[in-house]
Length: 334
Image (cartoon, rainbow, N blue to C red):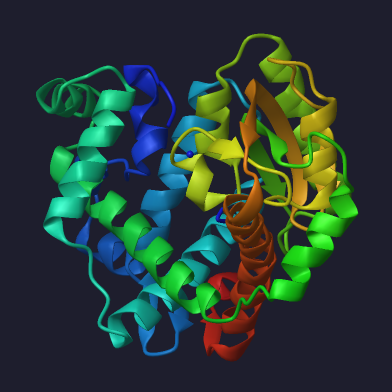
């Protein structure tokens, strides 16, 4: 589900939405020069690049603050640092690939995305900037993080799309599987959102399932779906928008996810749904029926099949680039 959709958040949750970094300036002023040198050691070499202790510390501080602010139990410090560093390594590999390919994010598109985030919170851009400042952030830092996410998405779309093909035979086979009948040109769409708890080297299947169950309990108790998606979801594409996937058509998601969509009542939150990506918490906001007869229907089916394949291929691609990169993780040396 990693293609892997807009959410409404409170101003206090803007930190999670924008993937901003908590400022350390006030803390750094108290460090002695020798302490600063220790802070800035290399914790991972990634091909020709490096991730510094100070960068890791910022991201860990951000994550810890978000968890503590919501009363969530923190994992052991070592585990937290390892999980954050692993995500930073994957991001660094992709950013290097994007630079080598000459990819960039146009300022016009960046401005449009930042404005959309502000509007999804019911704010003007000026109000959004004020809310960020209240959270210890700046609009400039948020723009930087949003640009990074957009660049990663651009790279993923380019790399994965070239590896996915949907044949006419696959489209016809899907039509045959749907059967005949008076409704054969009508499909049901679901407006859905989800939280993906993915598996990582530090999070096995049981741990992922337990975390998904804990988050479902919190959702049932009234916690914000969008906030939890932004904080926990491993689906980067939808997490930024509070887990929103938009309108989902048959064939766009993996079978287990699609089956859960069909079974859920409007507003109901699913039990953890296992797929090859991890555990999903799914909620359906609306349903509608669309007439996609004839060639229009074939085009829609082709797009749905393409999306399903692209979701699966993205996971494979991320694993490939990680295995092919030179990574010297020095975190364990300390």
